[in-house]
Length: 274
Ligand code: ATR
Image (cartoon, rainbow, N blue to C red; front, side, top):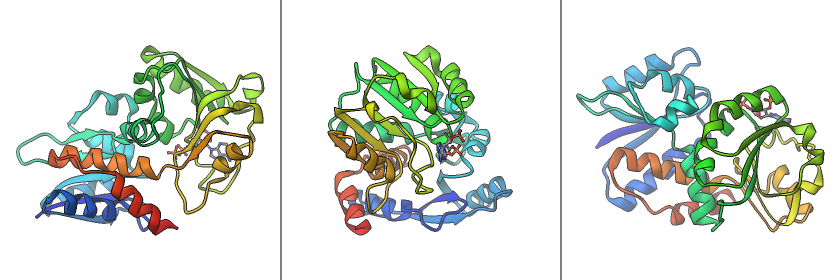
């Protein structure tokens, strides 16, 4: 039985062990997947200890994704550009491999599960923190007409726009400068405002009758952002539960070379949340 884990601080509410246990059962893979609380100042030591105990791979979550990036010997281009790693793989005799699967998880949820077309669409990405940074490259690879990053602190959005500018049509703005913007086809919330239960002060005209609003966090009930979009007539609203399961599936594939089916796992988790 090969050992894997998710490492973060806090870690108590992580759904990753339940998700990977289902993937393992479904694909007949003999793995053990735990949740490990690492001290804020002790990530590298916790990783070393896990490897000494035979650990084969880790998922990494807040606040260690950047440290995990620094710790990897070999990075995928998307992880290097994002400066963040959510998946580490330790194979005997191989360099430590790091990737970020959050972005591909979001794309799979939008395109495969929700059936959305991103090519040619105008996309608004709210937020410029770690969560936003991880999804910009895959969003641009989907060839939108335009990707606008809007953040409370405009300078952080501008910094990201510079970092990813060569990949596609990307623009940065301050949240409070969205008054003059036209409606968007797809609005994605990558701020942590929903986690704090706060509503972003957004102009209603950003939402049109065919808009889709996606919150990267998930909850038993619609988030404030989802409620806001619904109240202003969005065609569809979704939370980030599908993204969570899809990014996990991508990590599982990197470790085991097998692709689990995500739909039944998403349905199970949804039922548990209710
Ligand atoms: P994460 O890794 O979850 O993205 P982060 O790096 O702390 O966490 O970033 C949080 C993001 O949510 C930022 O874009 C932040 O805006 P600032 O850069 O201006 O701080 C945004 N955010 C958090 N609370 C917010 C609020 N109440 N209104 C608007 N934006 C908020």
